[in-house]
Image 1 (tube, rainbow, N blue to C red):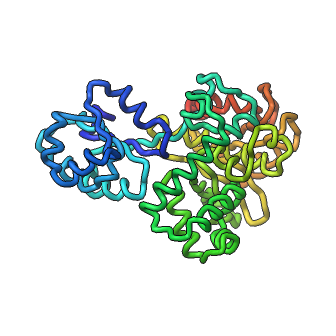
Image 2: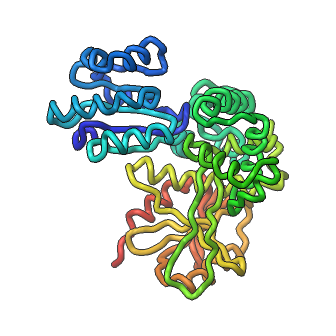
Image 3: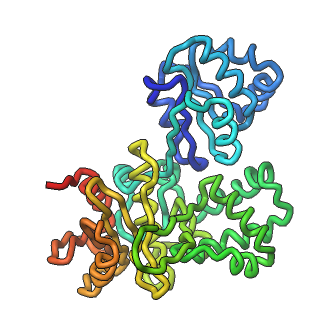
Length: 381
């Protein structure tokens, strides 16, 4: 993308590795971080002077702290008339996206970097046991520095609330907001119900909507849309709620060690969260937009994940159990009758071995990336 645009903008949650990635990919570019108060003041008060020090390109970190700088960057890039100038990063989507769309429309490639994928996590030497994955999550620093996940994720959340939410969220009742986020964690994999979330958090429906927008924009949660098609079924219209990092969701529901997850009532929902988030990373890490959805009708027929492939729709069911049950495939057959575009199906489960069955493929969680690659490569004969 750097060869195709004057700018590349990389967004994602705090501590997902944006700075490390960009500095490693572009070691020849100067690096500036606008979190530094002196540099931020310089960029705010004398943007032309600030940019003149950067020569013909740079990695500019946390650029959302000085959104006005983007207009000057646009003028500079238009004057130079070539690609491959600046790499911009930011962790606050709600400030950065608006500024980029206004100032750099058509001039920047947009990429999203979420925490580690399963394959990247594996390369750190981290445990591949399902409960360890659900407990410790995917934030790079936890695995790079061998941090205790419970402590690290607690610090991450408190820092997020105190730093980002106070500054950009205009939230006055922080205790209610913390309660709201924990309620969201307790409802991963469920349909978003703002009225219920707001009532349980003690805030209005309008406030709950605003808070959920903040959580989405700062890459804490995302909503998976329902599948819409011209089928003769009444489909639900509400999205489902997930966390970008399943470890953070586990922390927020009170998980303090991996051993608690074995009998926890939300283990299946957290496993589903890990599967859906991995599919989203698979798309983003290839520079693609999300093509994910779920299927559910008003009678309760449901499939966890629909993945659009080149020759139709792939169906993925998430099952946290380690023993394959024949009825795991029932939903495939019933949904396939409603959606003729379904081309293939698989179950991702909590076991260790791959199985090929007449009804579909069964793969362990750590093989999900390979399964999605095959979905991408599949072509009609």
